[in-house]
Image (cartoon, rainbow, N blue to C red):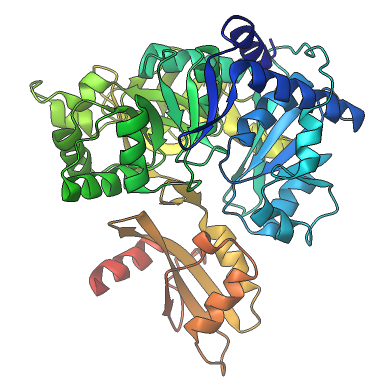
Length: 504
């Protein structure tokens, strides 16, 4: 089933309901939302874009994001949402790898991308995009559950982004699991898009469309604590996705201003480690408004969930252990802990978290080798380590792929290492994460310079900015004469982390 059918059904019965907002200003009701998406679908057809083709989106959050989603799906094509924080060269790689026929952009991102790609670009704030949405509507293209809907790019340990194949059926399963395991949705609610719509926040859009809820993009286009609290008070009830660091920041601001979060219905948090003290503080201040989820691109938002009641409970004798977990398996998946050979481990033993079910990807885009390593005997090997207790609560222990999570966004060390190693005066480098009170983690680079060359942090930082996105660059550079290694020549990152701790 084509997910765009949810918009069509809602608009036919509730066309006059408010749909898309920029701040407090209504942009479209549901009838207008559908009409714009249908027009875009027709315009894509006029550009020879058809079922199965990929249309990329390199955009900051805006109301047009959802028009693009449903217009592309209505045509039978697949969306390729690209993280707006990426460097233009990184976005260009994704366009090429995905074989995108078109890329929709917001003005500030399109200017740089135009210099890095030959893929046609359309600015969603331009008259040209408005004309596309005004095309005469055409019928919805039928899709199967197994057809590609969303090509999500997540970097791997090799440093090369991999495209996760997310089908219409996967997104529907995630959407239905949301209302089963996370939160109810009503037509009075508003989805508030403060986290990137290219990621988890956008994944939750379809269920809010199906329920005829409002969709509000903040005027700032992102996360502003005061804007959020004001919008919730005046235009709630709001539901939103937040990274743990965002929860900490909005709690601090609310406490400083004496605001209790009136109008905030639900905060779904995930995407990184949540410190126990932080979520206790948030619930103590705001009350029972929080739900935790654990997922990854390969099983989007749908591995486990920690319910609102569990997050707020302080009476259960093991409430701290539960709150330190990421919850129980969502209704549409099975979760188990596997040993090194994939054999299931008993409760309490730490091993690799494995999951199977309808939201799990069928594989990586045009990458059979990576697919074969990740999908084994029907189970997705997440690369994360953890254990299950007797009640089915899953607790994370380590992220075996050494991923750094900063502000809810994954940063893979190999990407940063390769960027630094492209500098002719850098001999060796190893990148690790360091705890940061505001962002969760920050990037630290241990650098060995070529003999006879000078170590200059400003030069290295400037070089990084020509290679990778700003948010990925190291916040600290530490010079070493040599990297610690084992007998096989592998860099001992545990030793580097120990040195950081000693220095701190």
